[in-house]
Length: 217
Image (cartoon, rainbow, N blue to C red; front, top):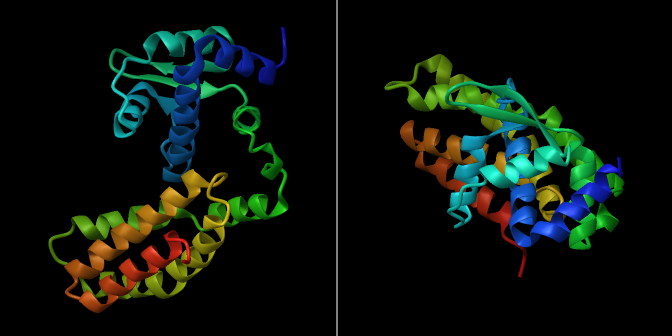
């Protein structure tokens, strides 16, 4: 059988933009699920792919193309029930490299700075922070313990997060999923600050997020 990268290129040549967008979406959903701790049944599921495609303005059924990707050995079914279908990417690192090369962006793949930022994002435990914040956000009333924990997260975890986020923005083409995951944590923290009646903190978080995302003039 031909190599993984060659199979990716063959699929892209045969099925064009739809295959490219689907493979990119598979990577994005897989990365997001990994950071969110949702990879119990596999790297991605059908529902996640469809929702991500719709969010990108694409409203089509990817079932037939997913079957083709499976026939090419790029993905494989990891779990299936009456209402769920999950897959694993057979080599997610090689898929990422192949798409970067296809996009003409492969020169950044071996950049040690990119690899370092990826490791830093993983060390932040975004899933754990997000889970704590989401529980706070769902409460009708925050206790004093909640408030102390929130302050600790803001002054310790989020301070590190913002430092990593600012560095990640410089490599946005390679770190899109990581950037989105960090932005999501900042957004939830902002909502909690507003809920706590702390508009100054909420505004500060909003400014921090904007500064970290928007390029300097």
